[in-house]
Length: 141
Image: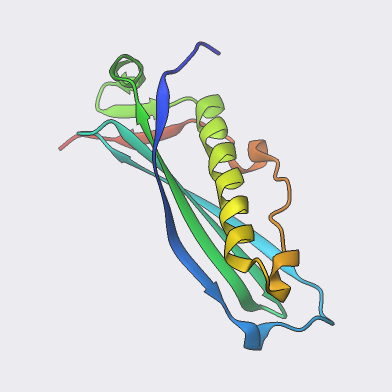
């Protein structure tokens, strides 16, 4: 993969909630993960939004959504333009996703430190299962 110039421009905790009433130390916990990608063509930014929901018996007890916004170098951005689309290669999107998941892991730890929820750590995630294709955005007006 050729080098793609980018920089982390912003990190945002979009959502964070603890629902203590839905938690039992006696029940098994499950986690679901979802991803969303958004772009800002004027500023040449791509945002990776990662949402993690911890549940027991189909009831959420931790929900966190973190977004990382990456500024793409103009030359790289131009190389992603194809007709009226911006297409980010799968490997590049996977890398940005991995950075966002790691950031989310740290925010979750920080937000739950000193509570019984601190034992819930985001597991290592096979990003290739989450990101299985290029990210394509139609930019026609």
